[in-house]
Image: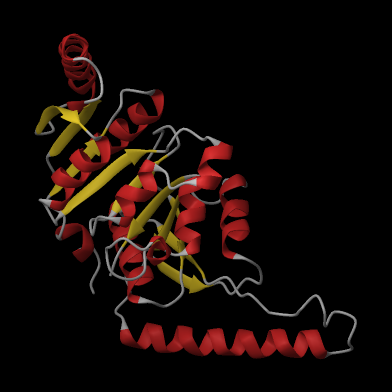
Length: 285
């Protein structure tokens, strides 16, 4: 796959908003990307259909006025349309996203509810699980383009797709390729002379072999840097890079088919959605 091909496959940007500050950042990023890549934007807001009809009518008028005003401040020549629907947010967002397989879905991060999030799937997770579209989750204020990118690389087609799209979105940045190396039983072997280091070396060599095969099988763009084999769990490693200001976008692949099983997203994708340290791009193969 050549440089920019992933971006060329996208024809539109769909940004979902509930008109919160979190969604405002998503809209700002969506229009910034659209302006850079010459793509049209659809702004979608969904009003809860559980409200009484008279209240829904009032909110619909207010939402339309507020969205039109905010979009006017962002558009600056970008082709766009604003859609306000009444219904279930998950269903309506999926309807618009799944009707356009070449659409990038942009959303703000969800409002954290630590207790409830531990018990049930968030709306964001449900949407990402049930769409084949790439999804950009926007957390940070839009101060500049994505200069620093980290790709969670497990050498799968999903992680390759997310890397390609991230580099296309960022235009000219360099991606740090991070295949987190988990060495089992390293703590138990820590007191055994040489055993822990020998085990780590074996896993590191295996990872390097996978990396070499992956690079031979894929034409990577110039922005794909050297693979950094770091020992540790993926989420803490990526969070540390983001917290240190070393990356502004994390790219990760969602594994498997689109469907009902929660596990197909992969544990790293779920962790990043629940507590994103920066903007997160999730793509399927």
